[in-house]
Amino acid sequence: MAEEKVKKAKAVKKVSAEAPKAKAVKRTPKLPEIILKSVKFLDDKKAENIVILDLRKVANISDYFVVATAANVPHLKSLSDGLQRLCKNEQYEGYRAAGAGDSGWIIVDYDGVMVHVFSFEMRSLYDLEKLWKDAKRIALPAV
Image (tube, helix red, strand yellow):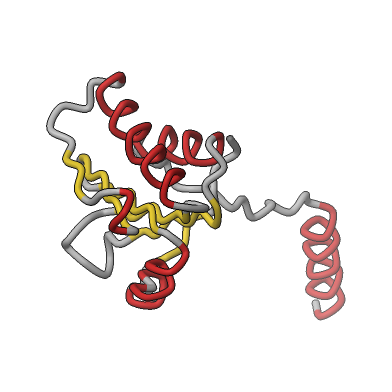
């Protein structure tokens, strides 16, 4: 009787060892279209240090932040104009924009997504990544 239990245990162990193991698939969350298009635009226009923060579990101010740095004031103005043009072209009705290139910080807000573009100095000063350190960082999508 004891021998049968041992044989059965060995057979089960052998079968389970031969069975293919399920791979843990790390899924990236489905991001809103505005994030994908904004990140692509910012990357194409050479914005630096682009970060996506998922605020859904830590704040009610917005669902996501996209944060990027502009190289200088003209670059910041250009990125601001381009993001607003993107919203118009994609017919994102009701988007809002605030800030100006010479202020060092612009924001484009649409449907729970706030895109922040800073000068280097202002990004260091406000440090949104530190302020929202409990927010999950989302890997940048392939652009």
